[in-house]
Image (cartoon, rainbow, N blue to C red; front, side, top):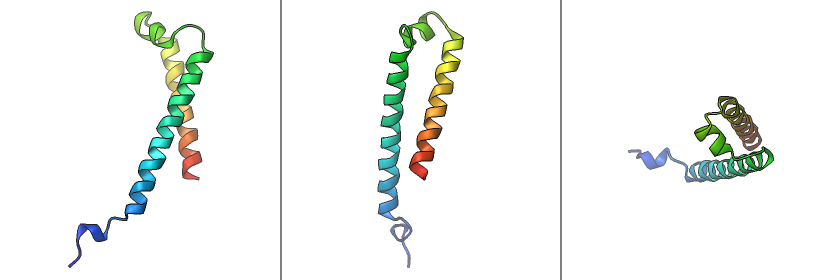
Length: 75
């Protein structure tokens, strides 16, 4: 009789967790660099001043960097 552990490969789970954490860390670093390259404080501009254009630009940058990181990790 087969158990659920027969279908789970621990190597793949560990790899997925490591690559996910690596991707999130790289994305956070890229966002920090983007924040420093833009004039002013992103959080203050988006939340307090309701700068929709900056919010859209930041979201587009985040999605683009995330796609690049995912492609680099996937191979």
